[in-house]
Image (cartoon, rainbow, N blue to C red):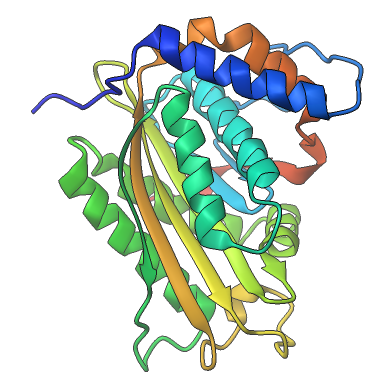
Length: 273
């Protein structure tokens, strides 16, 4: 079975992204443009193959090239900015759908975009249990939705395991995912298929409650009294499409993306040998 790509032509996707950028630039104060440089310290590396992007945890597999790591990461950053502009309030489902719409308009193929109540079991005592279970379920669903997506499961597992052993990364992630009304986070393992197509999945987890929690890290929060929602989507992108978007999209990110909200770390530290 061939991997599915977006049916929207490159020209239309490029026009949609440029229109988004034009709207945002007209609404924002003028800032000094920072050009994108491939060797910038904020760019992905093979040694630091995972990154916290505010409340989104991204991990990269063994097969993905540095160029494709940068491409999918830029699309994620851009879509996060767009979703936050379009949904500034506390509406996790609307934000999730706005994020996926932007990824779709940028030329990604988005398979499924379900957002449902999560039924936790009595044995799932902490958010760590919940996150692990929801991510696993998302990976299992991805295997059925996208040929070759089985490679994402190990990437997701090792990224989560490594995160917990990186003090700076977990502190940033914890700060960004927790709020007065609960937890909002996303996990996105990424890799590359033999034909060069980038494949990723999005597991979104939102909880309401937890305002009385005293545990410093949300992974240790008790789940009793929490209402939990989950979203799952499976995404592919043909990097050939990126050339038409590159200059304007990276220039825009250079202006408005906040590098202080990201922290890279080594995913493979806890990967199975």
